[in-house]
Picture 1 (tube, helix red, strand yellow):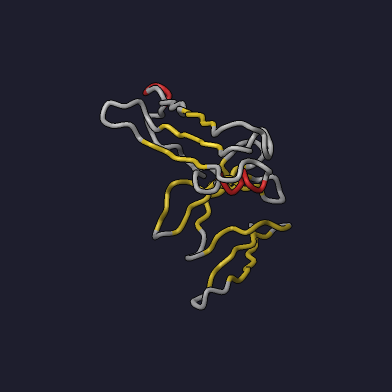
Picture 2 (cartoon, rainbow, N blue to C red; picture 1 turned 60 degrees about the horizontal axis):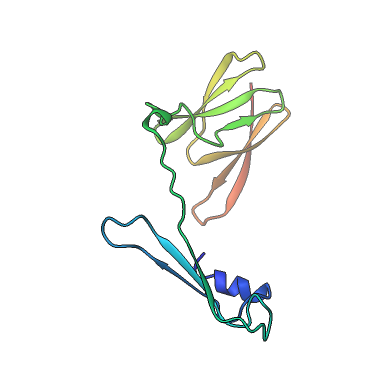
Length: 151
């Protein structure tokens, strides 16, 4: 971000010659300070008569309380839930067997109806009526789509 800020300021009609620096105070310091310097003719417009100005921003660092951090790893990760056309949820668990993901299939009532393990090197791409589509990459790097029936 620090390297792209001056370019964005120039494109947006801001100061030409804007400069941004980031410094980290020595031992016992309070964090990283970011200083932005704007050349004359910047915010006031060309010939605005103002000299260079600068602003120092101290970012706020928020730390989680120990009580906010879970004691265990969640049973499944973000983006691990997919819905099929029949209204079932396919939940990719954190359990892998032989290097392949395991999915729990849960119906509309919240009942576990099946546990599915994908074939090697497959990823669920989507669902159709009574089928699951899986993507697989061959040895040359080309991705193929496969279809398998859902019982």
